Length: 455
Image (cartoon, rainbow, N blue to C red):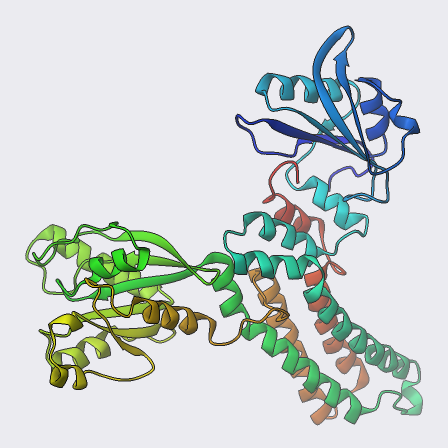
């Protein structure tokens, strides 16, 4: 665990050429250290949340003209005294100012140490602290909204309510242990059973939300697959609205996978254009086909494209049957509709998972995008929906669910209060791990080491 009593310093903005850089100090001596090298107003006499113009000086040498922002604890991100210096983004100036602060008594901050201090000082719980990293890493509107909701405590509030109700019953059962010889029940078993059912239902819903939450956070692996010359690369270009893949009438043009990101209504889909699936004619094509099958097995969404003017119904059904895998959603896309007559069009599959397009003429591409989006979201996304996006939270919820199932089994089996108490405590422990009510130094080190320095 890091020392939480000293003053830390780091660059809070990215390295590189730019107009402005922000250097952040946090700790009990932040204002004193900044004031000792600031030529301007006496910072020790200024109010919190004020900005002051002046110079940073090292003896008689002026390092830069700066703006100094003051945040007096506990009214700051870390609940400590925080000073932020906005200077010019010269690498030399930044390094000189940070070295000066270290010479005056600060030390370099470790990755995530500011947010760690915010957690240790009670400004954020652990799930909110993790949401800070998710917010910084968000690359779509949906991932930004989910991270922001968690940062504001939506997830934490729901878990805290569940935990408080369990704590009340755990306390009553603990009380029963003090009167074990008298064989009394302070915790009504029917009420406890009803509560466990309610909590299990909520925990189960949170567990199920991980599929969507993970898709929003990390994007959806989406493979475009089919036979050679089905129009896969043309479809990729149409979806992206740019000439990303080489298109040719020669079968087998795509020998390796091509990956691009398509954002649909705030969710990123990682589109992977693959080599055509057929009996390979050479070693290179064989490798391409193998990679196609590997990508399909790793995908969450498979867009199977076929040449509607060439393939037979039997071939189509065989392809679909061979490519369909458990846990993978498949969309069936009939391409080259511009070459078909009305009778041929009517013979094509018409289901919720099928669509008829012309990638070359960009017909029904918007409808396909809608199907791609709805296949991932499945009407689960709303403004106030709590979604689990963190694998650590998922595992803790799964362990909570297992403990609650044991509680229900114990009630039905009329087990003694001490064993019932143990299972409830386990459920409380795993719920507490999510928000940081229960934690260890190793866990904190693992979480905050992944943050960027300066946050």
